Amino acid sequence: MDTEPGALDERRKNVTQRPTAMVEVRAWIAVALAILVQSGSALWWAANITSKVEILQTSVTEVKTDMKAVQHSAQTAAQAAEDKNTLLRQILDHESRLRDLERTKR
Image 1 (cartoon, helix red, strand yellow):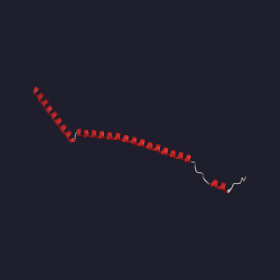
Image 2: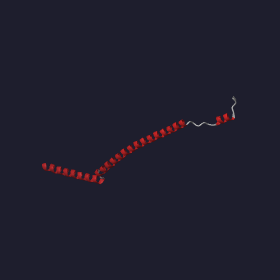
Image 3: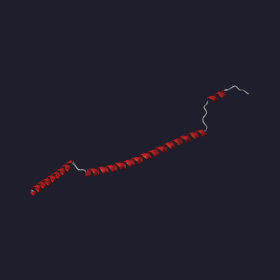
Image 4: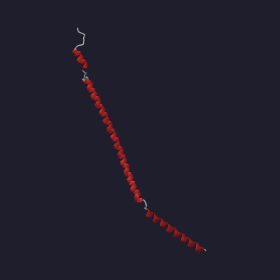
């Protein structure tokens, strides 16, 4: 037997060997599982965000409704001034009646 390396042995050393079919299948399965996990996580995150947005929309609608009710019930400056003048007139009227009553008692 000849133990000297020949030309065929040299060519075999330089050739890179391809992985077996089972190793390739496992690699593709791992990639597919990683994509599925990431897709599932993205769907869960999107559903969570969607529910939060719906809750916020409901809250904003309630606040808008409350603000409209407050605006309708709030007095304007002119109405407040008119109410103040009415109260002042009533107080002055009562004071004048009291004065009249005090004068008549004497």
